[in-house]
Figure 1 (cartoon, rainbow, N blue to C red):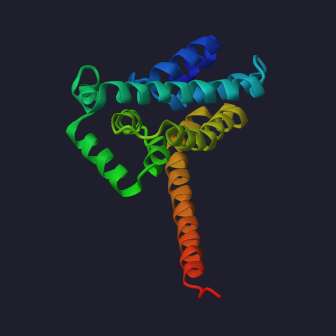
Figure 2: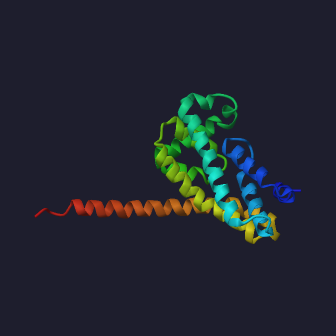
Length: 203
């Protein structure tokens, strides 16, 4: 029996919420099966979707903020302490550092769509004293795209859970890629217009 089947069988929203908070704080619990199970339970009629979805979204962002706060309070040395040093391997740290160097605050947005790097990204953002408002902005934008989509996949395709779970990872990957391209194009257009306006002769 899969994790989603067990969660749906129990029908406990409390278990799902607890799992989301734990997963967001670095516990080795995949977030997507929890969200899918919530969608299935909503489709079954046990709870209203318009209550569950915002609840899951808030839980995910609160947990992400908790990781950010830990990174902010303890700094880069936190990544060398247990249990985080078991999660933050040297290769993951290098990847995340490179991601921040290349993408800046957009790294938070992209990191939320990378299940293997999500925890490291949020801890790193806090340890580097990233502005909390910018962190919340990019994290909320990312969660507001991916989480409702995963929830909807569980809701509308509740009878095909295995197929849904196979498609979740690919879907999140392409969402992150598409939005990153859109952001890059938007920045290029804005930069072009700004340079063009600066180049106009003053009267």
